[in-house]
Length: 239
Image (tube, rainbow, N blue to C red; front, side):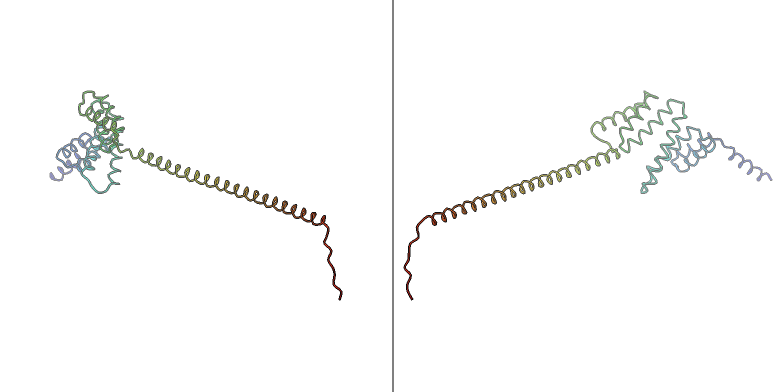
């Protein structure tokens, strides 16, 4: 009877755990390196209190570390990163403590920096410093991203794709323009050739006509001269 009573009290104690207690349990797992169990506890804390910014922040951190330790499934890791960013952003929207908001924005900046999206990382590092101007680590990361961006670094896939499309379209247009130009040039040359050919045909016909006229005049003149001269008389023989 006493054993059953103690067991019942233990069950009621577990069920009565608050969101803060789940966070404490999660922190113990986190610091011991068991991030999967820490994630479970942070999720339980959010089930108790969906607006607990600390639980959101800690859960996001546990998920980031597991993503970094994972390998192979890029699609799964991508979904995890999206969920992490959602947690960070929601935590930032409900958190009122400036130092905690600084850490949240710092971590978001680190995610974008690791993906070589330096321009976006810079914005979050600046927001972090607005909440905690004394954070030298954030200031260092900001300066590094600014330097990398200035030197042409970064892996903004969208911009790269747009640039590639723009270059491809430019090459395509140049090729089409060259083809059209060559086509128009050939067409013009053909027209000139046809004109020359037609002109030559007309000139030849005119020359032939003039020659025929001159020959006809010469023939007529010969006939006139022949008719004007007296004919010689010839003796006809008798049979």
